[in-house]
Each structure stands twice: as structure tokens, then as C-alpha cells.
Length: 104
Image (cartoon, rainbow, N blue to C red):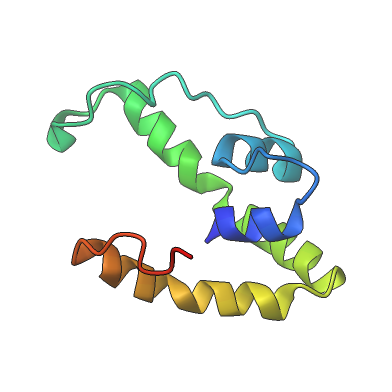
């Protein structure tokens, strides 16, 4: 949902990933060096992987609050809520392997 909110709120940038969101809205630069490491053995994650995972969620509430504030200020909050309500439909379609149902 953060990416959708970011695309609606931050129309001035193509960068909507968590790293950019946290940097701009929370003023923190996330270390993404462990992102492409081997995450296959969840019971034996390295300390750097655990730090990475913790940092990926540490700022989510602050980012959500800032995005909500921007969307409300710019009168886009109702549109955002409509977009959020569509997510379960897209998930269901993806899980059932339907492709491009809404393609026009």
C-alpha cells in the first residue's frame, strides 16, 4: 500500500521504493546491502539480515502517517482508499494466475 500511496502523493518522482520513501519522509537512509543475500534459511539469518529486516519495517508507520497527511492535504485520500480496496481483487487474480484482466 505504501507504493500506491507514494505514487498518488509524490507525483513529482518515479522513485517509490521503501528506501526512497524512508529517506525523504523519515530522513533516514536505509542500508540495503543485505537485500540480495540468501534468505532461504529463515532460521539461520545473519545479524546483518536481521538488521535489514528490522529496518525495513521500523519506519513504516511514520511513512504511512506522512503519506496519509500528504494525500489528505492534496485531496487524494478518497482516491487512495479506493485503490487500497482493490488490492484483494488483484491478489486473488494473481493467485489464480489471471493475467491482464484489466488490460485495455
